[in-house]
Image (tube, rainbow over all chains, first blue to last red; front, top):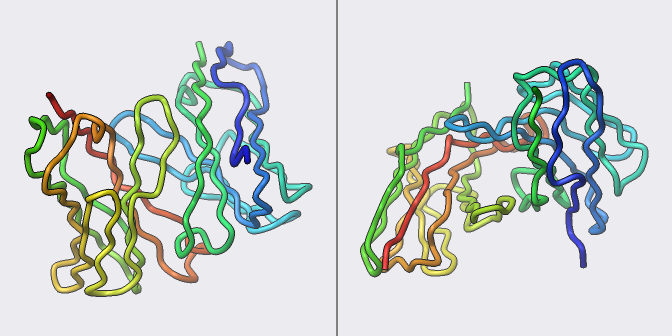
Length: 114
Length: 114
């Protein structure tokens, strides 16, 4: 059972470039989310989805887009990368309401924007 | 608003020492409380949780009791091991608010020396 997978593991971008961070889960979870982790800041919610076709903004959504066309996949798009987006990004999924049920995290993508 | 405050690290202990990591919260409703652990190079894993006042969550020798009167959820372990070295995150969610999204503290890094 693969759980939550993320690709790539590492990525270096130049300012202004765009890219998509991939996230997939094979547990048939309805809820998926993206967080960024910065030193001394903990994890902050970027976007989340409560099911296919439904997405919403979290605490820090600016500069990021998401879509959820299938239950399994929840890609995160950086439209025009900025150095402030240098961070570690985690995708997570949950079988129900995120807080009531356990969230399962992927291994993370470490992104550097120069 | 809703927030979590946990003790700043890093915390360095010798093997078999007693561990306490303090966590307090502010919440507008009735939150569920969680401790997540992040081992080096990995994503977060749920360590334990409590969903109502006076509940005690426990796992792998770790315990935390939901104290509504002091708005606290302190993590304790009687005898730590080198393998417990990790970053520990306290988190809360409010049922029904933002679909139960998790709000994390900033994390406390624990290092256990042999």
